[in-house]
Image 1 (tube, helix red, strand yellow):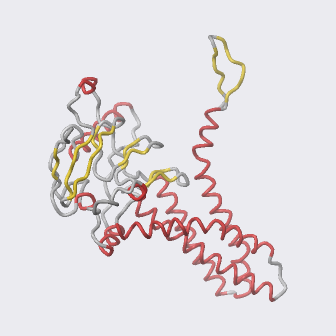
Image 2: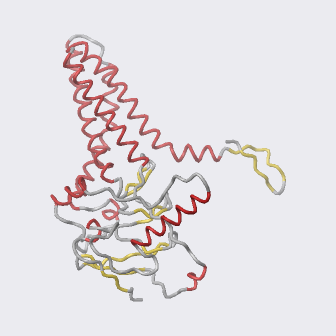
Image 3: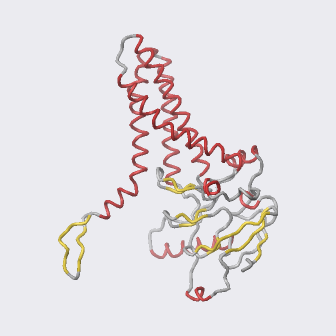
Length: 324
């Protein structure tokens, strides 16, 4: 949208396109990632799958149907991860009187499985961040179980959508390997018959180039999941000097990651009227504060609605005032 700005009280005749630039910059990565997936898949179906159908008939139809099903599954996962709430926490109400409360410490210390974990006060959201929570500078919100912010999905990866993100990586990796394998077979058969192979070679080269970083990222998360460790915790080396209190063992970590219940959403997005917005905002904060008090941290049991075994382990969570 073109916007004319005023400079020193007079209309500036220069036209600025900052809003459109901002939108393009914000969504460029996710649009490019989705476009690459669509274009490369279209080339595969138009070239390799068509060749298999012509040469092998029923076998080619079966291969095309299976690959189409995998492709649609990946698209559905992509959209789900990109559009899903990763676990945003609503901001707490802030009063100016809090600014004079110098007794509020920057950190609180909690004990999880006899291991001391520091909870940091978030100046933006105005509460102590629960275990494994971090503030995303891009989304400007605290995210439960924060892993990282993915520019290719234009969304944070947190506790609520990490499972789908990991399955998406596995699916894209498997899909890419199968596509490259079938394309290589296509090139070999076509070359032996004297058919044109320039287009499948181009598709294979681009697909292989795009697949390499995806395989690397998938392998990295395959390393993290058995230890129940997030990307943020790995980069910050949070558990290099102390044991990881959230590690249940390789098998239990895998079972929990794939089978744990879906966590509730703390923030509502659908509100038609201003009254509904205010009502939902208050409901979100009350729901969050019932679980986690930003001003006074109380003992939380294992059956807590949000901070269940994923954060607490098997024992109670004890909170102590930080020593200054």
